Length: 147
Image (cartoon, rainbow, N blue to C red; front, side, top):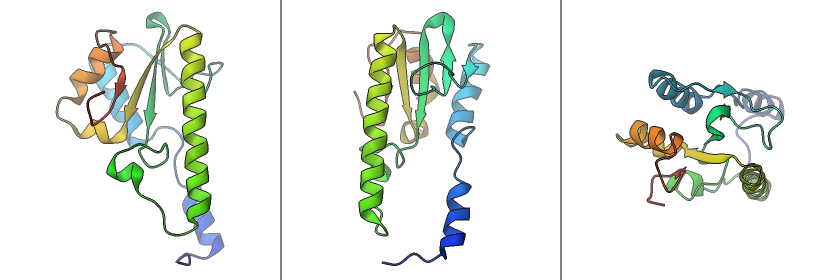
């Protein structure tokens, strides 16, 4: 299957894909702010530059898009038809990088809360997020399926 866009148009489309301040990140930040939980953005100096850092709690929040980070939900498992080899390799590299970064953060004494885009659709998501951030949950990886 060939691309429906010219190379120039495809490049412009891909440039518009956000790397920070995405809708899921903004939603997570809104929940934390409403609950009165302080945080910083960017995580400069930490492995993988986490999206949200709560230094006093030694907790970081990683907000992952299901497609880009290769989640096992229907959206994350979707395989692109155009340039499939490239995308499979890219998503595999993203998953390996995410695992390496999470392990490095944990080794440095940080708790890692991973929020998947699909999990945010659940009505109990805000409560689950706050429980995980406050350290009251045994599983801190938030997914649409039980961990």
